[in-house]
Image (cartoon, rainbow, N blue to C red; front, side, top):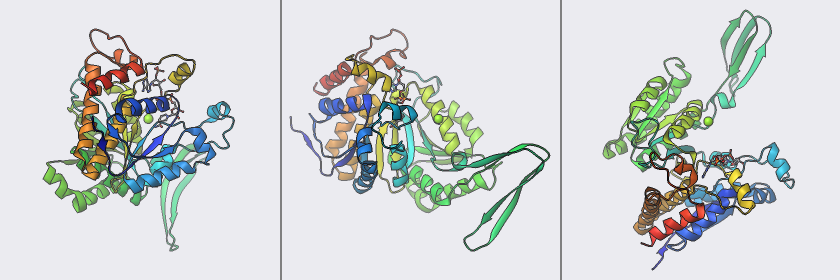
Length: 401
Ligand code: NAP
Ligand code: MG
């Protein structure tokens, strides 16, 4: 069989632990036998990040901007415990995802992979709900303090021109807590653009929600900026594709989401996205079935699994055990990236390959061959879980049918 030829490389970011093991197996079993894979490879494994003083992460992000498409394996974000586990680490390196996101100025979209056999907790949901979380500012970049006597708190902005604006936050009659938050117009605008862009790319409606009835100025700015971007750049494309941009209050959105069939993108402010993405992914089933896509305002896209490096399985693997780790989200990261590369380079064969690999993976599960996490969620007769190895081999066999 002739392999599909690629024109332009995509950026490949390797990672850590169990997902690094699966990464190689997915390439060997499911991609390289069918595609003459062209990637620019960056090893984001923790030790290589350490050796390069994290320069490799920056280089990978810059390469992503150059080529427009990347696929990333899950990576360890070191914490105090990892510093003990890896004594050679010279610093507690920052989250690679955070570094890449800030270089690309991107927004993260999370969507579940759906299976008929695993019904969402919310019975009306038939299509995926994609959550877009604004990952800058608000309470995540706030300052706060406690006071222990009556008094008054004011907030002052001193402009570069010297002009000042002051507001009274509150006069208090006893001990109190205060918090100052901000967001940047440029960040909100990038977020809005990434959301509209991704809605057009994936042909889904876009919902956006805030609490602008209460936070009239703060959330009002979010609402206004989204409207401006929609009117200025995206309305024509939305109308041509029959898509809808829909703004509503966060509480109304929550009620409508629960009653909906799914099949749309829900753009959320930072805190709402943090909370709602956990709610939505849990209700859809399994973390191992969540995909994650980082989209920059210019359309640059990076695909990955939403889960981490699955450390517990990795320790069992190191002891020589066969694990039943679910590779679906990582496979779908690869198919997402290959499809996007195919679209950008006008290679229908590459796009069709991505569809075929997704279909073969889903059909394998439908036939009753699946990893332990999914076997536990299936309604009715419980299938016997297989190892990751056997699962990948079953998909391969289907690809060759
Ligand atoms: P995790 O790797 O997502 O795993 C948490 C648990 O979820 C696993 O122990 C496993 O449960 C289950 N699970 C997750 N993915 C699975 C899969 N593909 N197949 C089967 N089960 C799966 O989260 P973590 O253990 O909190 O974090 C481990 C490391 O990943 C950390 O160092 C963290 O920094 C990193 N991380 C990276 C990313 C990223 O790069 N995007 C994201 C999150 C975390 P059972 O053990 O019960 O089977
Ligand atoms: Mg959360």
